[in-house]
Image (tube, rainbow, N blue to C red; front, side, top):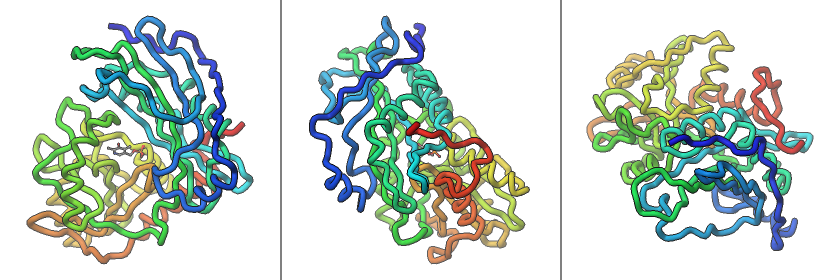
Length: 370
Ligand SMILES: *Cc1c(COP(=O)(O)O)cnc(C)c1O
C-alpha cells in the first residue's frame, strides 16, 4: 500500500472561531498557575486523511471532544503517534518554538513505523503557526513557563480488522505549562526496572507512540512506590545496557567533562533535547560519546569518582539532574546529592537559547506568531 503524503501542498487552513473562548480575565487566572497538561487553549487543529484523498480539511476549530465510532481502529489496536514541543514567549512578546522540523521529521518516522500516513514537514510547522495565530495569548510570559504543544495522529477508521487504517486524523492541542521545577531544579532518584522493558529489537521503541507509554505505566507505578520520580529501562535483549527513562534520555558526565549517552540502538527514542545537548557540549569543546553504557559501568564509575554527574533530558523538564539509581538490590549514588555543575550549566544555556536570552547560533528557533 502506498501512503500518499499530501494531496494538495501546502495545505490551506480554514478557521472556525470558538463561540465560547475564555475571557481574558479567566485566561489570566489559568496562566498565573497553569500546572502541566490540565488546561487547554480555546482551539485545536484538525487535518483529515483518507487513503483516496490524502491530507485534506485542514482546519482550526473550537477545542472540544472528538466524535469517534466505538470501532475506531485506534481504540483497539493503538495505531497512534504523537509529538511534544513548546512555544516560548520572548522578552519582546514574540512567540517562538524550538527545532520544530525535528519534531516533524520524527513524526514522519513514527508514522512509517506505525503504518500511518506522513504529514509534510511544512504542513506540520504551519499547523503550529495556525494554532498560535488564534491562541497566541495562551503562551504565558512568567520565567520558565511555556505553552506545551501536543500534535498527535490517530487511526479513526471504523473497522475491527487488523490492517492499517484507511482513515486518519491529525490534531494539535496546546496546554499552558508552569515552570517544571517551581521550587528550583531538584535532583530526582530513579528506579531501575529489572522485570519490565519498554522496547524490544525491531519493536516500536524508536517511535513516539502511545503504546510505549501504556507499557511503561506499571513499572512507573513501581518507581513511585519506591519513592522514585521516574523509571529507568534497560535494553530488552541483554538487560545490561541503559536504554532510557519512560520519557527522557539519559546522560553521564565523566571526570574532566567527557559526556556519554546511550547510542541510538533502535530501542531508544531520538530526543531532540538529547541531540541539542550533544551539540552544545561539543560547542564547548567537550568530548561526547554515544555508546552502550552498562549498569556496572555506572556503579563502578560513581564509586571511583569517574562519573561525576548523571542527568535526564526531554522537552517537558528540559534537563533533570539524577542523584541516585535505586533497585531492589542496590543504590547507586546519593539521594541527597546536589545537582551537578555541568548539568545545570547546560540546562541554563539551552533554556537561554529557547527564551531568546542567548543568540540562536544554530538557527534552532522558529517564530510562530509572524
Ligand atoms: C519524547 C521522548 C523523549 C524526549 O524527546 P525530546 O524530543 O527531547 O522531547 C525521550 N524518550 C521518550 C520515550 C520520549 O517519548
